[in-house]
Image (cartoon, rainbow, N blue to C red):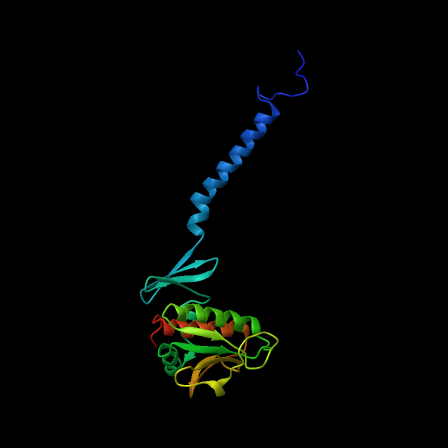
Length: 199
């Protein structure tokens, strides 16, 4: 007896065999995710009573019931010198400017740091306005430390030989020699602003 155009294996058509294989692969994938993928998908860290989860968006923790993201662990940021006066200037204002040179070699890291700072301080009711030190073709305010006041301080990013966050008059300076150090300095400032680091 001839089988015809559709060959049969163990009494199953090619279509049925294909469906079984696809079904098996789908079930295997789901089981693999449930039993293997999920358990290793996040790393957890504890620091000073705060729990940190490493996610696709960075390190996340909760502060006063709100989720905040960081790029470095507190242990990686605690060695950076942060002037307490710089933290107090942000805590004691309702609004401040974040400014930098628009042609800085670290403009991407500075933009990310400024954005992260503005999101984090907003959780405490502080508004941060982006600006540049130099005029650009964009409608972004031109602001430098000469515009800083006790009520509206200015935070400025600038390349420096050492990584630090310091206050001078009504201005806050974040200095760093590289992109990655700007990111660490931003985290060092925010960890102190949010009370995660207390030194």
